[in-house]
Length: 282
Ligand code: PMP
Image 1 (cartoon, rainbow, N blue to C red):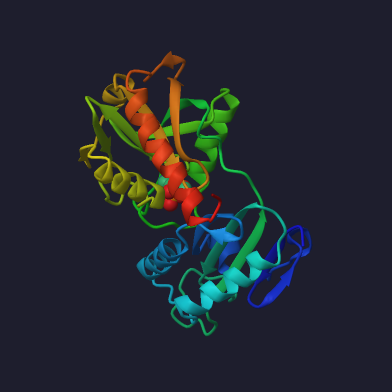
Image 2: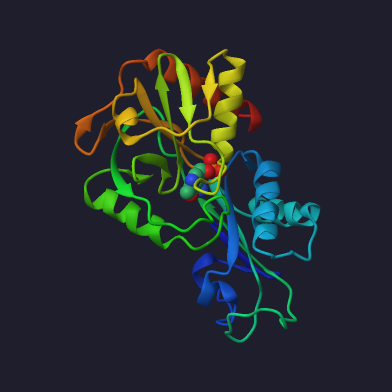
């Protein structure tokens, strides 16, 4: 198949799939999701993505009826049915189907599983990107990968309307993360990235980058940094499953980075090598 959608046991082409209007994802964004990229029919870091969706679900009191093993089996069976060497795997649990009502105390249904697989390419990590800064107006659930993404959608649209690729969110002076990525800087040979708290998503790519730095003996500081520190950093880059590691050359129309390409390229190339090895591409 060219692509596939899944909803509670039913499958079909994405464009033809319908879901019940009373699924609480539709009214409330009452659910959590995760995304992995798939090469050679192997989804990258799939166990980490599955662990995160169960963690996200538990944090909003959603308890999927299926075990992680069963979810993994379903996701692999969907991937197997789609042609192509480079795919995106999207999956989400919503609280389930029930007549609209904020309180879910008396809900009888079980959480719904939604998923799709379709062709998609990674953002090219061998290009450089433009960013803009946007005030972070999200709520304090940023560590939970909920499907409530309106502020991120608007910020990302603002970036594209300005001819940039990513919006870098900040609360006051403090850089939090991108609209759909984590942001890191390099300064004096040290990788600095925001600490894990309720203001950022614990990115799986971020965690891999930290491990790569440890392997390459690049010191890591998980501490907040300001917009000014970012603008003056030796390199600024975003990380996400769909992009791995991509550097900015301009933010808000001002040139940034370009002073420690050696360290940036070492991290990016190590990540690319990891991807190729994990997905059997060599
Ligand atoms: N932060 C936000 C807000 C995101 O949406 C994403 C991508 N889903 C990330 C960070 C990066 O996370 P990951 O590396 O796990 O894709």
